[in-house]
Amino acid sequence: MSKHSYPDADKDAVYRAIFERRDMRHFKPDPVDPEVLQRLLLAAHHAPSVGFMQPWRFIRITDTTLRQDLYQLVSDEKAATAEAVSARSAEIQQLKLEGIREAGEIIVVSLQDRRENYVLGRRTMPEMDLASASCAIQNMWLAARAEGLGLGWVSIFAPDKLKALLSIPQGASPIAILCIGHVDEFYSEPMLAQQNWRQRLDVDSVMMENVWQDDEFEQ
Image 1 (spheres, rainbow, N blue to C red):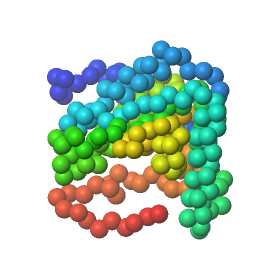
Image 2 (image 1 turned 30 degrees about the vertical axis):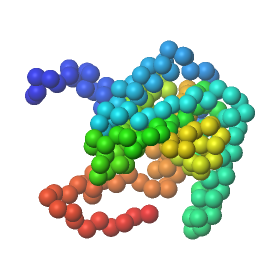
Image 3 (image 1 turned 120 degrees about the vertical axis):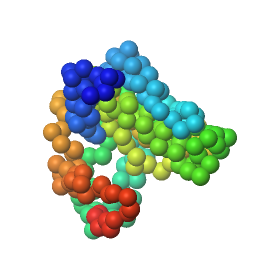
Image 4 (image 1 turned 30 degrees about the horizontal axis):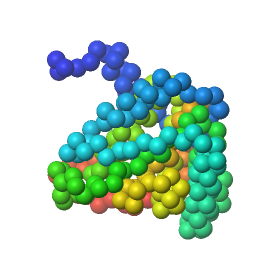
């Protein structure tokens, strides 16, 4: 055992948050304690980032009209997605894919503008800014679960329309609408698995050694 290892109880808590984290869609309207929200944002801001660029930017939505506009953006894209995936259109229409109108807090996460100025770690892989911001969201997700709050990452929206709605600069790129709030209960397993959209792959099926091995694509 490493001398840097946490005590067993602390390790158990970390793994518990990982395995019990859920992408939540059903919320209660109760407000989120401002101090707790600040802790979640601080956890997000302590995520690793390539070149220490910290590309994440958070926009807290407190205007009720803006909330409704966000809901409409997501609803429009949900309909477009259902049309694009015609074979499963009816299933998509039945899925609850957001909690924008119910959640206590809405945070829009965007990549910053002028990201081309950051070269370290991104010269050949500029998409590492997205990977870094995703780490920030995951930090917030795990912290929210530890605080007993649900969090749902909504990504079905037209980025250009969201940018215009929130006056996001041209060079920036919104990647998430986060719904955060109290819930009656956490899903026992991912909601899309519960509704038979797709099941979790076995870890061995995504593990390879030394070279890429054939992977059977599964929709």
